[in-house]
Image (cartoon, rainbow over the protein chains, first blue to last red):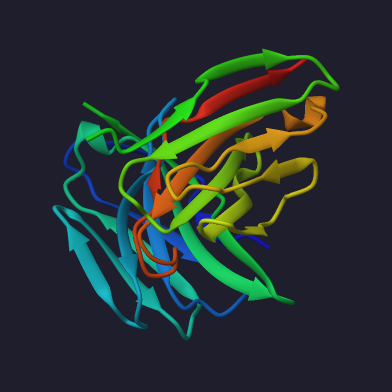
Length: 112
Length: 114
């Protein structure tokens, strides 16, 4: 079952902040975040490998809580270029089958 | 620096035909992946490869075949295309395993099966 992201969609004004959550029903060992603009390929933002780890990329940062099996992406002082769909991604191995699974996605729109 | 490329970018085919989607990367990455992206399902892993001549199934492998005779190429073949395989297909690569490394995505192939 794929990780569930919330909210499903969010609209912001330039300069506003947003938080996107990614929750899994299974243990998480690493979490990746990607952004995909309409009609384009997903682009890697960051990876979190350790519980509690926080990383940042410009004004975008993320945290990872192993115990809660969730990760959050923080977008600070949003810019028009932040618009797109954000996906979390994680990996799991079930009965010997490897899966890399993306979350349900969060559509973010930043307005001028 | 070409990176990762896919061809064709757009393809229309008919039910029952065999179709091959090409993926080529210039980074000598060990891992390569094929995903399909559909509305309502997001991105789903079809097959992946850890190295040349090593391939394995992902989440939705039925109806697809892959091969990897060279590190830089990872073609995906639909043996007998069905309408349910209409989708956008993305190829990706990473230097090491996807759990520990960035995945770089190709531009995608939009496939329509009539």
